[in-house]
Amino acid sequence: MTISVHRLRRRRPGRDDRGSMAVEVVLLTPVLMAFIVLIVMFGRYVAVRGDIDATARDAARAASLQTSRTAAEQAARDVVRASLDDDTSCSSVNLSGEWRAGGEVTVDLDCTVSFEGLGLIGVPGKASMDASSTVPLDPYRSFG
Image (cartoon, rainbow, N blue to C red; front, side, top):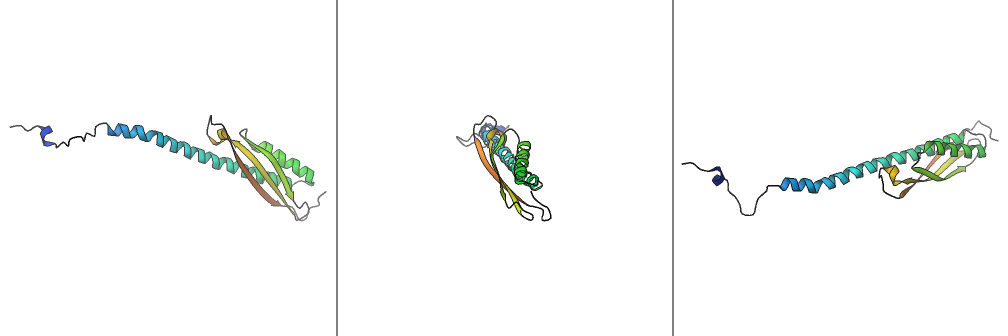
């Protein structure tokens, strides 16, 4: 007497799991891809934010090395122009502070970054970012 393997396995009516893994993969793949794109976008945001903060710091440092306020404003603008990529533009570079020995100079940047610069290729729009940096002026230096 031979017993069929099919008879030993109990089947419940309406419980066929064949193909369920394929359905799960099809449903989860877009969710996982969206999650990966979100991680890449967040990483690009952090990188661009760091670039803008570094540009503000470098502009303030370049301004603090100049002997006049006019030269300092030009030096800060030159650093901003040279430091940022094509997807980032700063509409205003504001220089403030006490221009005297022992004073401080502050550079404020108001920048816009296209979404393409954040890794969202083909997505129209812009994000606004601002940064500020303050550096001391040399207390033993004469300013003109």
